[in-house]
Length: 369
Image (cartoon, rainbow, N blue to C red; front, side, top):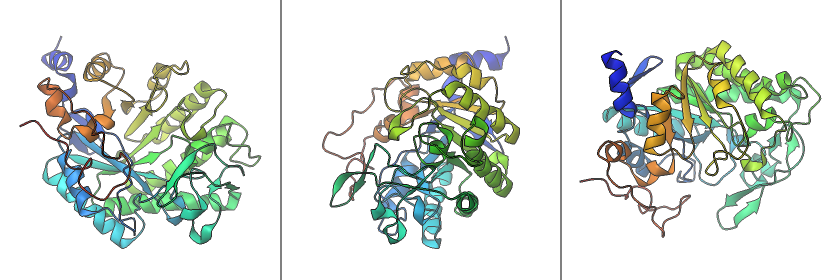
């Protein structure tokens, strides 16, 4: 066994890894985490600069899901990347993260039918593959949690415009100083809803067969890769997570096709949510190893990983990187806590996960002294 292999076996999470044109200091990533903290113009605030820079000891930060256009919003106070002010706000974040030695990607999304007329220009219906409402809720300031609005089906001719919105958003992210972008292809949002037979009832080139249902996601990936380069583009998938009414009768062949086609485009990483997002990892039988074998880039996994689980996944080749979600919210210094076997902070009981305008629960979680 080589010395390098011996180190990986004993110190798996803390080994550097090459990610396209950049090198990460360790194999831990901050998962994209919606916090609903942007200002009224959907610009990241100065407190967001502090929030992300506090967590820059992780090898990679994947910044929260960010709208590609005015029609892409589905929740209150989630940021965008389509105006000059938004780009400038994110530039402050990326500068702060880079100053601390970490790297940062931006997750870009279109929420699709997981939205409400309240968020749409002219109070129009949200868009979706097919014209029916999601069995899901969103949050509106002053109203609380509300049912998602009935959606309208995108016209075939409109799809190219949304593909271009993703392309433009990726270009704006690079202008804002991000090292790359992650396409949000999961959790019942627009691209994921096109993938699934429970939400996509179309009869055009974007519906019916697995090949047709995967077309929109692959069109977006191709356009973004052409704009900023494959070594700056990742994608997130959640094959069997039912959140946001994401329904698919036969996920294994669907996602094997998706990953096989992604391999041809060779994005720099695939980020896979295993099981039910935020819940059971074995909610549906699924062969993740079969997907792993189809792709030769960096394979990142997520969902409820402990330090021990993450180390085991990397040592045994099931993953190259592991992303952590709520553990990073409550532990800005998670790599140090893992390395030194320090206890983890518990979530504040009196602070919201989403929203708020003060420091509490956002930038005031304690670090190891």
